Length: 246
View 1 (cartoon, one colour):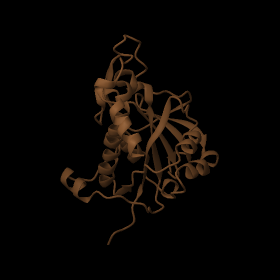
View 2 (cartoon, rainbow, N blue to C red; view 1 turned 90 degrees about the vertical axis):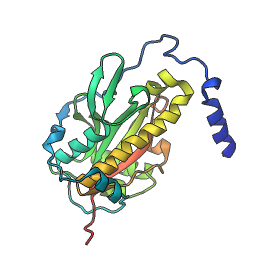
View 3 (tube, helix red, strand yellow; view 1 turned 90 degrees about the horizontal axis):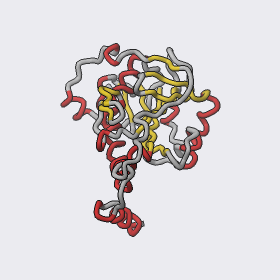
């Protein structure tokens, strides 16, 4: 295993890489993932009246929660969490997007799927987050995907016991177009940026999360019906109301 790791680091050094498709002048892939279907507009991020929690407090209080109380989050909170982790601030047409998280070369090669376990305003099920339109697209019914997702996540029940669960899916070519083999390093770094924002804003919601990297790749990618040659789940983030700590 150590030899494989060393080989990957060696192969992804700049001096060992071939030309990228960008350097060859090939057309750029789309800046956003899209799924067909009716879009459910989300409230604007400022619709959530966040409690006054300082950045210092959010950082110092941050921790992972694996148990949640069965209390739904509001749609304003979900909207705020999605915007905070993948929100679009500016689009430079045909070139790049600028979002609420950093990304190598402003590639922003992640799309977000959301499993809604229980919310008052939305039907339980799997949704796709259209970041450009700040809207959700219904993908599959809850009974269709719940057990498959749970199995893909190695039966870590927090993914179905939290109010919602985020799945951050890498569009591999969106990153590799510019960076080739080295792009996989950047995808992993970008995933960390996204998850850290979820941790921090969870503190403003009196909620909790626990970033998950342990899952069966094939089962989870199948559960989300992904083209495994082009896309891959790299990180998972349940979000729910945390138990009272008195």
